[in-house]
Amino acid sequence: MDRKMAPKSVIKRLDNLLHKRCKAAALTTKNIGETTEKAALVFLLEQGLKLLETNYYSRYGEIDIVMADGKVIVFIEVRYRKNNAYGGGATSITRNKQQKLIKTANHYLQHHKANVECRFDVIDMSPAELSATKKNQPFHFNWIKNAFISV
Image (cartoon, rainbow, N blue to C red; front, side, top):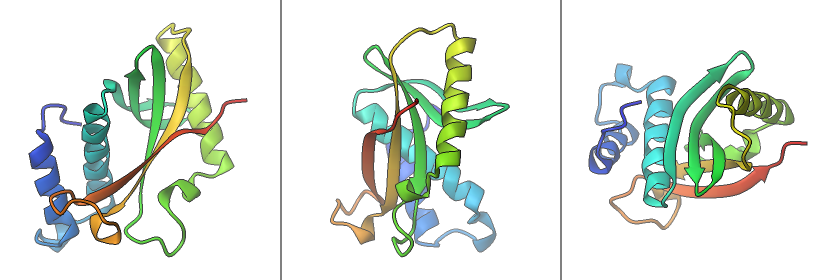
């Protein structure tokens, strides 16, 4: 993920993707996923969190964004839904997905020799036209802190 991309350029790219002003072939699930993760990252940086890592992989799975909120390590899953017909993005995080995230987070903590408090957050995103957000922001962000716990 390009960490130097300015928030305005992320928003412009997202706006182009979501309003189909780009070529149809360029609009893929992967492109939308990468773009929404960048938008979520910008949103979280604006909230005062500090970036530690993006797309952390282990044999158990992947964590979209790893950030620090003070002394707490935050593992963040980004979910996007273009409509809420089947529920929001957060409802798509199954118990199985939670277990994969927990195992991957444990791997991260062991690999970085970190013995600190951590939490699991979800950024549930939808297009701004489904909500009453500002016109210059293409997404509505629903930040769910402590979305689930590790047992």
